[in-house]
Image 1 (cartoon, chains in turn red, purple):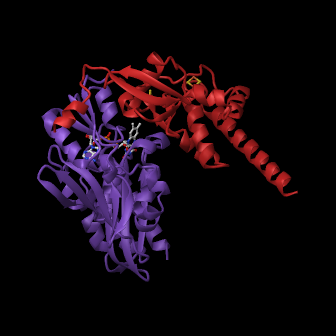
Image 2 (cartoon, each protein chain N blue to C red):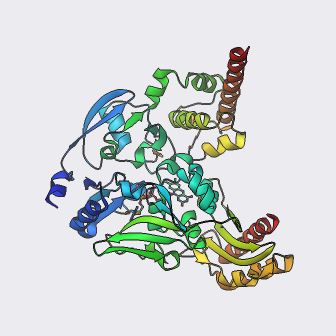
Image 3 (cartoon, rainbow over the protein chains, first blue to last red):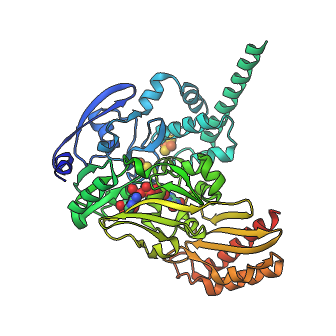
Amino acid sequence: MSSIMSDLDEADATVRVRFVVNGRKTACDVAPRDTLVDCLRTQLELTGTHAGCEMGACGACLVQLDGRAVHACLMFAVQADGARIDTIEGLSESGVIADLQAEFHRRNALQCGFCTPGMLINAHELLSNVARPSREAIRDALSGNFCRCTGYEAIVDAIAAVAEARAAKAAQGAEGASS
Amino acid sequence: MKARAFSYFRASTVEEALDAHAQGGDDARYIAGGQSLVPALALRLQAPRRLVDINHIDELRGVRREGEWLRIGALTRHCEMLTEPLIAEFAPLLRAAAPFVAHPAIRNRGTLGGSVALADPASEFPAVVLALEAEIEVAGPAGRRRVRAEDFFVDLFETALAPGELLVAVHVPLFNPGQRIAFDELARRRGDYALVGCGISATCADDLITDIRIAFFSVGNVPTRARRAESEIAGSRLSPDVIAAAQAALGEDLAPDDGDDVPAAMRLHLARVLLGRLLGQIGGAT
Ligand SMILES: Cc1cc2nc3c(=O)[nH]c(=O)nc-3n(C[C@H](O)[C@H](O)[C@H](O)COP(=O)(O)OP(=O)(O)OC[C@H]3O[C@@H](n4cnc5c(N)ncnc54)[C@H](O)[C@@H]3O)c2cc1C
Ligand code: FES
Ligand code: FES
C-alpha cells in the first residue's frame, strides 16, 4: 500500500508526462485533471486539434492515439503517458493525407474549418481500414463529427473521390508490377 | 466546463486497483475507456477526488476460450467486438450489436466492462449480456465472484457491483451452430442512443424454436427479458400467428415510462415492430 501512495499523482501537483507527439519525444507538466486536448493546444501549441463541446459529441478534437482515432477531450493528458500521439499537424507534415486535404479544398468540403481536422482524422482511419467504402459507410464513419457549415455532402464527396483515386492508383500499380 | 481536481493513480494489477480505490473511499472512481465518465466529469455531474486508471491491467485484457465459456476481459474495446475472430465465432450477438454503439472513435476507447458496469438503460451491450445469459466476474476486497447477468442489472445505473468492486470479465456461453441471433434498434439518428432496441438468441432444431431469449433495452430502468413473449415462441415454429402472439405479449413484458418526447404507447408499439422484424430474421435464417 505504501508503494501505491508514492505513485499517486496528487490533485494539486503537476505531473511530468512523456509521450511521442508527431514523431518527436515530448514531455509536459500537467495537472491530473488537464485533458489531452488542452495539453496539446496550450502547452504544445498544437492548435490544429480543436476543442468544441468537450464532451465527446462533436468530433473536433480527434487525434490518433497509438494509431487509432480517439477524442482528445475524453482523455486526461496523464493517461497518455508513454503513448504515441499524432495530431492533424503531424498527419499534414508527413503527407499521408495530402490527397484528402487537396480534395476537401477542391470540393469546398470546408468553410470555417472548425470541424476539418476531426473530419480528416476520421476519414484517414476509414480509408486505412476500408479501401472503397460506400457513401453510407462514409456517413457512418462521420456520424460523430458535427459540421455546422457544409451540410456534409461535399465532405462525403471528397472522401469518396479520394477512395476512388487511391483504388485506381493501386490497380495501376498492380498492373505495372505484373507486366 | 472542466473536471474538478482529482488525484490520479495508474494501476497495473487488480489488487493495486482495489487498494487504490479503497484508500480513496466514496470519492474514488475507476476509469476505463472514459467515454461516459469523462463527459460526466466535464459536466460536473460527478466530481470524484480520485481516479484509478485500470487501462494498464493486463488481466482485464484479452478474449479466450475457457471450456464451454468465452472469457471477454473487461477492457475489451467496443471496436474489438467487430474485429476479434473469437467474438465472431463464439459471441456473434456482441458483434452484431457493436456497430450500433456510439461512433467509431468512441468505439476505439470504450470498453465492454465500462458499458456493463455503467448499466445505462439505453446501452446495447447490457441487453446483449442479458440475452446471452452471460456471467459477470467481479473482484472486490472480499475476493472474486461471478454474478449472473439476470441478477446484475438492479435498477437505473445500478448494478450488483458493491462500491469499490471491479468488473474483471464477462463470461459468455459459447455460441453453437444450432443457434440463431438477431439484433436491431430504432434510433432517430445513426449513433444516437436507441428509442428501443432488442437482441435475440434462439436455439433451433430444424425450424422449431426450442429455446429463445429476447432482451430489450431503452424500455425501462434496466435491460429487460421479454419472458411472456419468449414463452409464446418456445416449442413452436415462427408462424405469423406465433409472431403476432409474441408481439401482443410484450404488453405484459414491458412497461415503459412516458418520456418527454416518446410516449409509453409509442415505445411499446416500436418494440412490437422491432420484435416482428427480428423474429422474421430468425425464422428466415433456415
Ligand atoms: C457521443 C457519445 C455517444 C455514445 N453512444 C453510445 C451508444 O449509442 N450506446 C452505448 O452503449 N454507449 C454509448 N456511449 C458510451 C460508450 O459506449 C462508453 O464507452 C461506455 O458507456 C462506457 O465504457 P467506458 O469504458 O468508456 O467506461 P468509463 O467511462 O471509463 O466508465 C463508466 C463507468 O463505469 C465504471 N467502470 C468502468 N470500468 C469498470 C470496471 N471494469 N469495473 C467497475 N467499474 C467500471 C466507471 O467508474 C464509471 O462509473 C456514447 C458515448 C459518447 C461520448
Ligand atoms: S471537443 Fe471532443 S468531441 Fe467535441
Ligand atoms: S466547415 Fe465549419 S463546421 Fe465544418
